[in-house]
Amino acid sequence: MSLFLVLIGGLVLFSCSEDKKDDGTNATDTPPEGVSITEIEVPPALLQSTNQYAQMAVGTINFVNSFKGYVGFFNPNVGLQSDTDGPPWVYTWSDGGLTITLTITIEDNQYHWVLTFNGTDGEMQYNNFVMYEAWQNLDGTYGKLVVYDPEYQNISSEWTWVQDDQGVITVTFINHYDQSKIIVTQNQDLSGTLEVYENNILTMKISWNADGSGNWWTYDDDGTLTGSGSWT
Image (tube, rainbow, N blue to C red; front, side, top):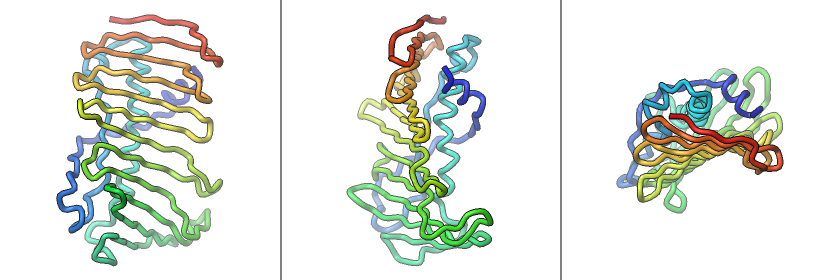
């Protein structure tokens, strides 16, 4: 339960419109408009539910959707032209003491974005440090976004999203600091499930229906079921 308290207490909500997927038609001619992330949608009835676990599901989904806040980092400044004809496309700009380079390539039928920092932001010195990285299939059905920690020189968090042939969307968030993981699955009718893992052990599961009703299960640190219930 501790992970949920942290999530609910520290949520940053992002209000975003649905992105169009890039079908890759002009992939070799022009750079992509940006990373097209598929958000998890919540049924209106679930939003309105006063049940504790329904509200917990909504809050956790909002947290998982917060990867939208990183999308803007993969767009060059307005009006900035690539240093190369591409692919790869390379954009360079300055922000105070920082020189920022965005490189977009096409590899294995995927777009690949790399955002590199050089210089200083007034607190830290950077030397070709990769701050953010993202991959996305040309048809938009799979993607991954990684955030790196400049202090510890490792991955701090990552998101992956997949959409299958039936339109089922699965988004996975991993926090590499505490080894926690959240997996959210959304069906076409907006029903879905979420699972929370700590140290690879399932500690919470919540499922909901399109009408806003649902079920929940909790587990201890050993993965043993400790409680369950439902709401209407």
